[in-house]
Image (cartoon, rainbow, N blue to C red; front, side, top):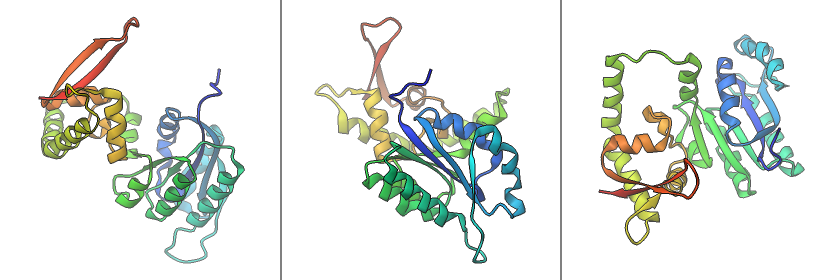
Length: 248
């Protein structure tokens, strides 16, 4: 049964630069944050490069919006998506927006929606300009979802070594980000609650996600860095512990 307290989200997809094969992963990811009240996708549907989307729209109840290309080389879907977003905003029927695009043209839209008190989730490729990523409350890279679509597979030793190199390369910046975030919310003994730490990391870096480093959750990522103390405390509820982090 649907929880009536779940945030209502308007999901607006720019079909011009998002692959249709990821639609399952995109909608499953969005379900973590709320219930899609509006689901619309924008493109010039007369163009062959978006033909793949037509095969998945009906299965997911996504409404296609036609926008003809009036100017060569310009993404015509932008204006239609922006106009619809503002129309939906003024209906007062949603609590937030999910903008699925890698286009920096939506930076001002994301900023305007947040100014109106909306929660804004962005989804796009890692090449998405930093301005758009920073304008969102949270930004998710679709490359993560691409890996999930492939399903579980046996991890080879060479892949593990590549993963270790990725963490090693990002180690200094990542450790500094986590350390400063802990210091921002620490108690008098230097401990920071893991849930508050996760929120602080997102405030500083909307595109922060443990999955970007190969970990499903924040705690395993922090453990892998071997730079922080971890204290798991009893919460008074069965099988539920409160996790606190402190800089070593």
